[in-house]
Length: 174
Image 1 (cartoon, one colour):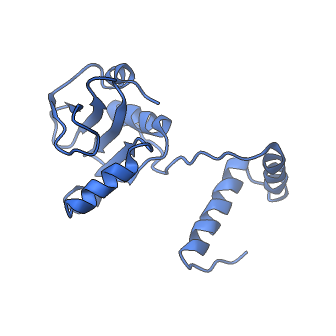
Image 2 (cartoon, rainbow, N blue to C red):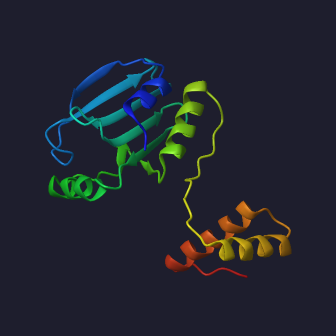
């Protein structure tokens, strides 16, 4: 989990705005801080947290130069967020105009992307997905990767893409 201090360090303690969070899904103590570099083709970052206990509910990273928006929502609060969006008849996927947020699975992925955006560096636009597998499964995957002469990460990515494609009804050739 990320702390308010860690987020502040990421944005270089540059706070450009702050306000009570307008939705009720995170409770009555939710507050939002923004850090914008002041450039239309620059970047901005948002953290939504609880003023009383400092729980971080949501993180947003906006890369205006590359027209990308990333978001991490605390898994303990995702259902409340999505329910309120539905009750408000709002498509919560939309970041701005016709651009949707890319929802991130880990705070680490958010931090890596944010740091690269701030530094004007290229970054991996894929979403990092945490995998909790047994040692036996990892060993089997390493053997498969070796047999296909690819890295373990490449093998896992191929398998995940195939499972996603199968779920979406896309046929693939083995």
